[in-house]
Length: 108
Figure 1 (cartoon, rainbow, N blue to C red):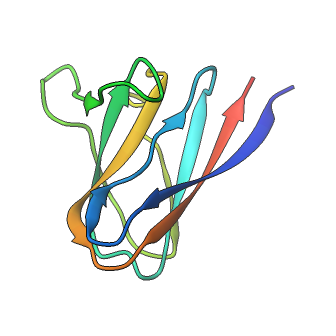
Figure 2: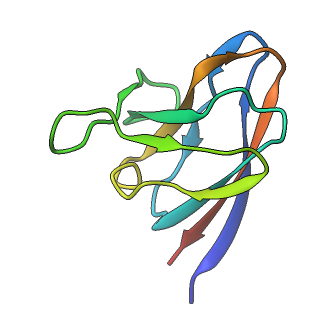
């Protein structure tokens, strides 16, 4: 039986990259984009450790994995991202105010 976990990732005011989150053993996840979010596209960074060096997540065609987002809506995290251990979200816009993004994940 799978269990559901809830997290919050934060993008600070005047920033575009969130804090990190462990997704070890996670199989699927979704993001709730807040109403005041400025960006319309997210990309993802990954690292082997939570405090490690993060690099862009790329697909088999060497393109950055991206997700078009709308505010006040849930969006599935792309499967290419779910193969990593630790992730950060990157907004294509610098967020003018702190943004708290709700994340729900499933663990087998």
